[in-house]
Image 1 (cartoon, rainbow, N blue to C red):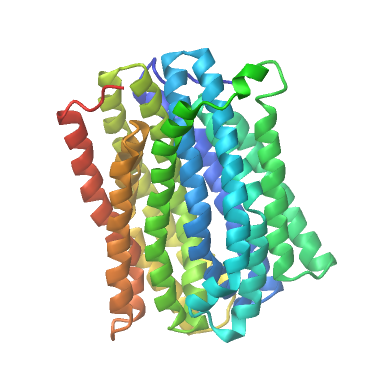
Image 2: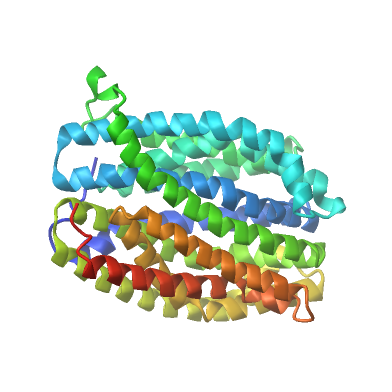
Length: 445
């Protein structure tokens, strides 16, 4: 499976080798998101961009929970890989399949039935409500595809294989863009076409990831006994995975509160923030990829009981993030106007100016976000997911304060500072918790 053993060799070199495919994947993912937003904005209209923006906090809440849970379910798997216990590894993998199947059955009908209520609750403007409901409903129908994609990719990375998930992601994104153009331009499906393109491409990518465990030279070679449900393993995976999912959701509640405040500022501000945040994600997701690599690195070395490599990994991860943050700041500073114009066109000067203001402010806080990804994912890699939930409350507090200030004369300026404030509060907490766990000797598996 092109496995990379993260328990040996130079920590910096191992982190870079493992991070690069994840960074490449995140860049391709955000490049797709950028192209998708561009296609929607140019072929359907600015209101469609705002409608997709209205869905984002719900995606953060539900699909963020899915992503966090799937990553969490893979932590015991990664620890068993580091400990080199083959039978336990296979059992963790199959029990993860059962858990994610249960998530599909629970979440999909619940979110489909609640789509209209959620959008109404967010005060989605009437002029984009129909489009937002269409896009959101189809996206929720595709929750099983999203779960399949996230768990299969997380499981491959637990084995140290970051290459194949990248290859399959690139392929699925190409399929996504092709389907976008086909459904919107040829079949005239509008925003529904963009949503279906995403669902179909995620399903294809998930199947390709999963195929690595069943076919090929290095398949996992599962037997029927490996598929037996182990309540002990399910309990451990839930104890780590569900808190990580809830952490994403708690943080997302802050995004929902913030989206409600944005919605009350009108569809022009919604479009500006949505477009600017797509661009912001293009630059910050590589930091999150380094964080994901850190979680796997820490989990494998936790399983191998190597405290020295654990500490060196944190220092090297921080170094990578700081260097990247300054580079990303410089690139964004000189390209932000061209990127905003590419999405919004040469329309409303007010909308363009608001998007530029958002990007200018948030770029100064890139190092804070990068360091947060290191410390938060370190805690998760150690298996102390409960502590990570509280960091989600830190982000919630930051976005709540900014959302309240957005209803004052500060208006959109407060929205621009919402994410930086959330990152800073959470970073302070996660840094303290990492030190607390290390000093108290809680790194023993």
